[in-house]
Image 1 (cartoon, rainbow, N blue to C red):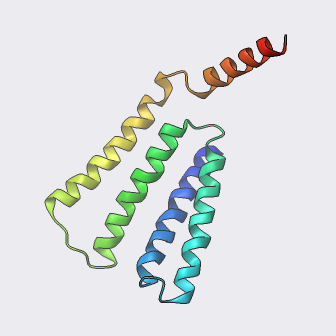
Image 2: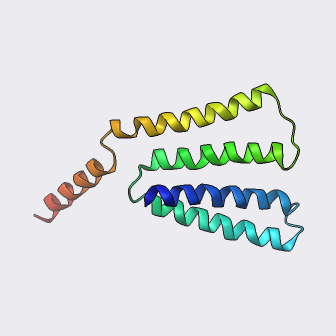
Length: 126
């Protein structure tokens, strides 16, 4: 379920950022309100995803894929300039996200930290 939260958090962040552009510097009311709605939703879901996903992995995926999606939306929807460097950079972001996912199983992560805190707390109580 944590991965589903993360995916929806990314999509909500992308929608919120798109509304930033559509708000024209907070001069349009509905898009301005939607920025806060979607960013609130995104951060809530990102927080829920952290129950099972390491913060380093979740945040990197959230920000990396969000950036790649927004760059793509900028090119396709808002007719921003496109260059080979921009396209290659988007692919490198995606490759980095894939690399983080592949490397996720190679470290002890949150369970070791929580176990260490629990042991230290038990020792303090004794």
